[in-house]
Image (spheres, rainbow, N blue to C red):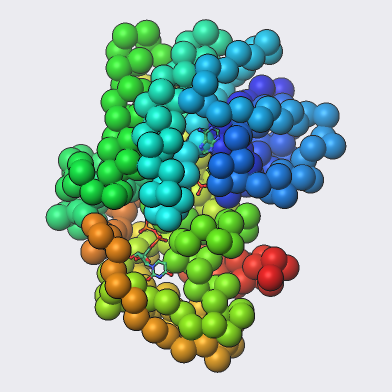
Amino acid sequence: MKTILITGGAGFLGSNLCGRLLKEGNRIICVDNFLTGSKENIESFLTDQNFKFVEHDIIDPLFVDEDIDEIYNLACPASPVDYQDNAIRTVKANTIGVINMLGLARAKNAKIFQASTSEVYGDPLEHPQKETYRGNVNPDGPRACYDEGKRCAETLFFDYQRTHNLKIKIVRIFNTYGPNMASDDGRVVSNFIIQALKGEDITIYGDGNQTRSFCYADDLIDGFIKMMASDNQITGPINLGNPDEFTVNELARKVVELVGSKSEIVFKDLPIDDPTRRCPDISLAKENLEWEPKIKLQEGLLKTIEYFKTKI
Ligand code: NAD
Ligand code: UDP
């Protein structure tokens, strides 16, 4: 039985990861400050004797008595609305918070995993994006707290590896959706499904021709676990995402159709620095982890629609 610490464990991906690793027979220490996560996401685990919850902000040093085998560092607001509302805390989580978690990994001789992001590529000029692409990020715009924060977190991971020989694992996650997403966090999949279920207008930002590639949470969690279990020389960064690329217009039409909704589509202003195209090249994940997503957009959306029906 491994002891695994998950920061951001009460969030969307963190709670899916806690559930999966508990089911596989591990002991989980879930660390979260509920900035964007919720107690509801972890409620069903609280009675499990292998699950321990620690309410804590990773910006403050964390002391743990137990031995720890693995750390998954997911603590950081992920939706553009949330991280822009908490810009300075986002930078702190990705710098001071990351240093604290790297220090904990060093003290415990634990392997440490970083949830990085496709946002390190900014508004990419190369398609699809390979890990070797250095990105096109505006360092001063409203998305920079997240994009540059996550880039600095990757730098810190490699500096700790070079300096202290730490075992590091970095994945760059592309847009992921599924159960336990917060219904009010402003991300496109949750927004469209909630709007369609309520019969409200579907809000497309800009002309809707921008693209994203949407990965279902279960597929992504498989990738996390394969990455953590990979040989020590595999550090990443490795892209994890679904390479099927859709425009936001296509997503809106699909959600309306699957819900069977009467919602109208309306167009609103495009947020500043909103990336035009985003699609992962996942050759490295296929080669190093034998991983690729299995769940198609329609199947994943149907499961997510069922989840949100219980929430409204
Ligand atoms: P989320 O907002 O649902 O979860 C983040 C969790 O971290 C929340 O429970 C929040 O309360 C917690 N948290 C935030 N700051 C914290 C702090 N300082 N101390 C302790 N806890 C803190 O987001 P998510 O979609 O589950 O994302 C999880 C991770 O994956 C994030 O690091 C995010 O950047 C990364 N990621 C997600 C996606 C995606 O599409 N979901 C894409 C790229 C990267
Ligand atoms: N978007 C939209 N309507 C919404 C929410 C988002 O058209 O109600 C767009 C947003 O402008 C972006 C894409 O959908 O082009 C994905 O946005 P999201 O916030 O989910 O994540 P991002 O990929 O931008 O980090």
